[in-house]
Image 1 (cartoon, each protein chain N blue to C red):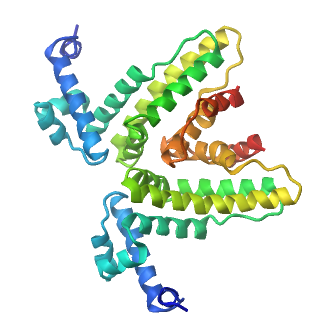
Image 2: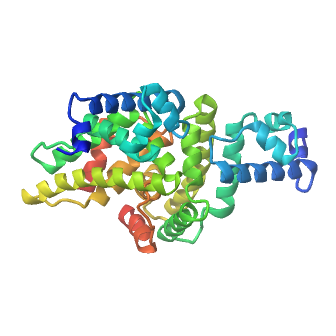
Length: 188
Length: 188
């Protein structure tokens, strides 16, 4: 176990710092929105030194992405229902619930903030999308292995995720179960 | 001619003020991004009183929307090529060029800023989308009148516009002509 792993072991000081920093980010963003939060403010709210944040995450953008991914993976894990249609419907329903929930557009706003935020922002956004893309690809690979004909991950993004994101972004909700299922069925 | 019309006649003082205010908004946004511009700063840059802006536009959000619509209508007018496929391909290509151009995500960022900005922001975004929606609907209605089978405007949003917006937002470009045409062909 190297220092980095040790610092993050469950229940250790690293885990407590991580939880406090994540909570501080979540609170500050819900108060002010993305783009109006600094490392100094996160550190003060979490009761840690700025340098601890830079050492562990490297940049504000990477920290924001870590918070977003942790939240996504906790609240919208990739389903494994035994069929592609079941997986995609469950996944799409989770995303619909998440983006129309109390924190609404949080992730889309993060994406916009990152894409506006220079090289580090773009890199952080790439990392977030790559991780979620890998998870989605595993779901599609399982379907192929079962002998189902699966679309590619970009097809899912283009024709299932993108319409939901844009409808919420443009205030053209609600995302009814019928609408969400119709996006999946149309793709399959 | 009432006072409001008189104030906006081409070449009059109203037109000069309008052009100066639009230019000030465009400049400030390109310097700082949406969400970091105030009515006071726009007024100072344009050389007019704050009260002139509130009297004419009512709110910062409505002003931002007016600027965005004016820009959209100037740079991405709805085409009339004589066929639905031609119209949609031209329209999609214009949008692709606009959102990947030098000011890139400007409109998406405006949409995000407005959707985060309370009742006035939401109203302004609704107005912008309603106006562009009417223009798109006219294009689809012309196709129906020619006897072509046209999708509805939300279908165009979901499966042509939304994928392009999200790919640009997520840094998954470029939007090649083949890709843009494939979105249109898939919808038709």
